[in-house]
Picture 1 (cartoon, helix red, strand yellow):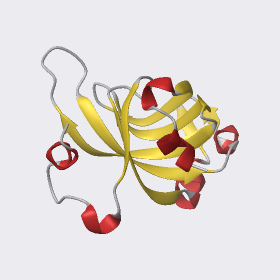
Picture 2 (cartoon, rainbow, N blue to C red; picture 1 turned 30 degrees about the vertical axis):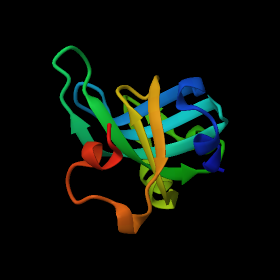
Picture 3 (cartoon, rainbow, N blue to C red; picture 1 turned 45 degrees about the vertical axis):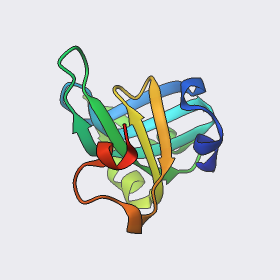
Length: 127
């Protein structure tokens, strides 16, 4: 399902919504729905690089969710219910996404577990 992320140029991805569970000058963890390609995923921050001219560069680990999973979130006073169940059911992948804001996507890579860097993801991906 998430292989669609690798087949389509990230500049062509179209976001539907992002639900941030952690935010510090931009999303750091949460859920993302795209309409193109039609996928949903849970994301967690891997690395960030300050940008003095704007929003920081961020790399995220992607965890697969079935289509429609976001419909299970019940928002009450800005606290999502059922988020823990969705996170527990999310399937880790080897996909890494580069974005500043989960609305404009700058890159996507497959990085197997045994090739993941211990520290500088940006250097590892040569970005």
